[in-house]
Amino acid sequence: MRHPRAGADEIGRRLRLLEERQEHTVHRTDRPVRLWALIEGVVLERVIGDRDVMAEQIAHLDRFAVDRGVPLSVSSTPVGSACGG
Image (cartoon, rainbow, N blue to C red; front, side):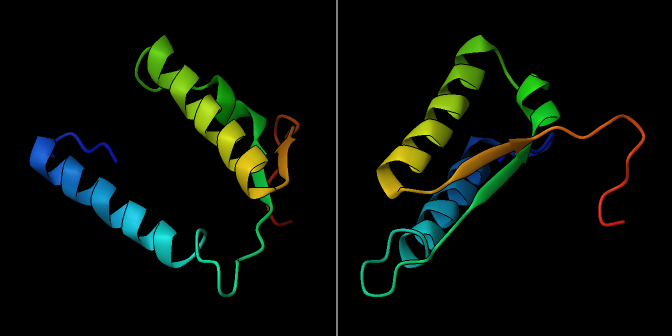
């Protein structure tokens, strides 16, 4: 959602679009999407914002996994390995 030149209005617009997409995909009840979230462990260590922002991001992942029944896996990638090959 963040961009160095994006103002509060633009960030708000992007957030509304994201929420709208989620309503039409993840949160739909007629044909629910089956998801499996795979997160590389290093992204959980990369600090974005402050501790409160990071705590809310992790809490959001947890709520998403628990409330929607989405399996959430964290992978560890050995140093020097390449994705896809």
